[in-house]
Length: 365
Image (cartoon, rainbow, N blue to C red; front, top):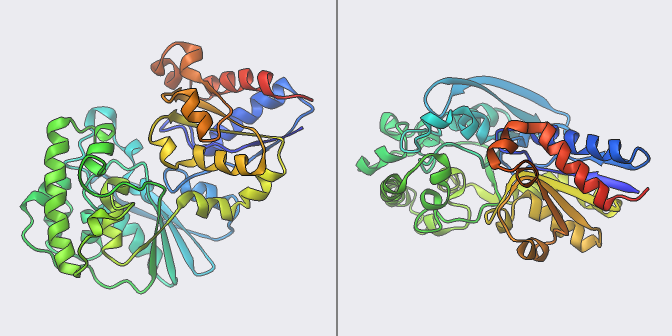
C-alpha cells in the first residue's frame, strides 16, 4: 500500500515539513511494510518558501526587514528561472507577534514591501504568497516600502489609514507581480479582511469596525490614485489583511496558491499514484472549506478516486460538510487529548498520536 502524506503547516506549532514527518513517522511505526511518501504543502501562507524549496533549485536571498511591529526580522526570497518567490508571513507573520501583543490596528506590512523590492531585482516575475499575516493594513505598509507617500502614515498600521487624504503611488516595478492566495474574500464588509481575519489577529469588535472604516478610506484614496474603481470588491482583495488589494492596485494578477504549489510538486500525479492520501492542518474550520490546502488536496484525491483523510489539531466542521468536500475521515488531536490547549502543548507528539489512530483505521499491508 502506498500512502501520500501531504499536510499544510499547523499554525505556529509545526511547519508543513514537520507535520508531514510526524504523520509519516506514525504510519511507518504502525505499519512498517507500507510505502509512505511525504509532500508538505502550502497555499501561499507560512511555509510557502520551504515547500517550494523542496522541488525548486534556486538562489536564496536573505535580508533583515521590518517586522509587523517594527522589530527587525530575517526573511528570504527564492529566485529561480527569472521568477522570485516571496512569503509574506516571513516578514509580517502572525507567528512573529506574541499573543499578548497582537493588535492589527498597529501592525504593518512594510517588511513585505522590502522583500518584494529585494525579489524584483533582475527577475521578470515576483510571486507573493499571501496568508498567515498579523497585519490588516490593506498593503499600505508594502506601498510605503516601495516608495509611496506619505510613508510614515502608510507604515503606521491599519487604523492610521483613517487619517489618509491622498497618496502618491510607489515607484514602478519592472517585474510583473502575482499574488498567490486561495482566500476569495473582498477587502471590506462582513466577509472582508477585518471582519473575517481581524479577530484571529487580536481585533475585538470595536477594532474590527475601526479597521473596516480605515480600509474603506484607504480603498477610496488608492482606487482614485490608480484610476481602477472596484478593486476592493475583487475576490482575494481581503487576503493577508488586505495585502491582496494593495498588490492588485499595483497591477498584480491573482492565482491560486495551492494550484501553484501543486503544479510545482506534480501533486496530481503523486495523488493518482497513492492508495491513501493523508492531509492535515492546525485547525479545520469553515475557512478551510473555502479552498485552503486540506480541501484542495481532498478534491484532487476525489477526482482520482483515492480516499483522503485528515489529521488536524482541531476540527470545527461537521463530518458531513467535510465529507462533501472530499474528506473521508478526520482525527483531531484536541479530541484525543481533551482540549485545544492540550493539542497545542503536545505539538508533534500529539500529531503522531492522532496519526497513529488514523493509521490503524485505514492502512492495510
